[in-house]
Image (spheres, protein in one colour):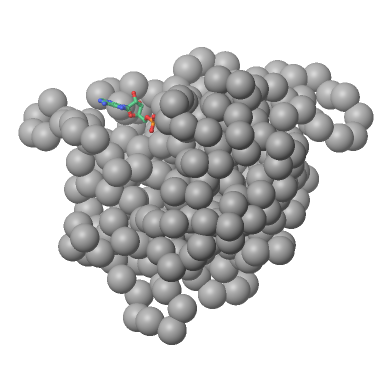
Length: 327
Ligand code: ATP
Ligand code: SF4
């Protein structure tokens, strides 16, 4: 495995403080490696967005990071903990080195400026000594990278489709030549064909430009196709993490298996979708033991009493699971 770029260690994030607070991210440890596309999957409410906002200190009150470390490894420098960095240094890292595209990002384009203006403004901030002509060339190149015709440079956001606006946002994120791109459901507002096109573009760009991607979605089938590794979240914890192909062929956690059975496969023979019975846990009344036990078809004696630890099954490297069936 290549070098780590971002190492999340034992991250805890709460909503609220004091007796009424709830823990939405519990003791999460996760590493994004250089050049890797890491997918983060889980049902709505499993804590994916809280993890992404929390680790970058973008979480809004009542959200509060309660503990852990988020180590960012810049080339040739000692790692820095994003959770303890000064606000000014954090802003610089987030702006230049870690780009973020969140849900509904396309709505944050400025409606009164053209695509060219918005892209060249970002490039000017990144390369203040560049000329206007070179910024326009770069804007053209960036649009081309995300599959939009350069003629669209003079369009205003309302003249573009949702898919195009989201691609422009991705182009803006890439304009800074980040080392890490974090995307939280950046494609859910788009149809399936568009989602796949955007993801395919990202993976191609990753190969050309060499950044790492943390891609968050509830749609595991997209991740199976496009990511190198997948981490699955349930009730604020990572319950399984494995290379994408392994997780697809042989998921170990019953929740991952249920998620895989909730989406049609994009390739291969059709299979019946069974989904997962019941609903995600209420953070204010988390089940004891394994949080998945009330919904788990394979629950047995220890599950309701003891929390399973995320560990390599049978000492096997490369994958981890938190389930008593494999401890
Ligand atoms: P989605 O895919 O719907 O965005 P998610 O997996 O990203 O879901 P989060 O949005 O991180 O999940 O939410 C995790 C948990 O935190 C949920 O139970 C949610 O109800 C709770 N939560 C989120 N925002 C708040 C808030 N402002 N106050 C209290 N609880 C919150
Ligand atoms: Fe199911 Fe038990 Fe494994 Fe939890 S620990 S997923 S309840 S078998």
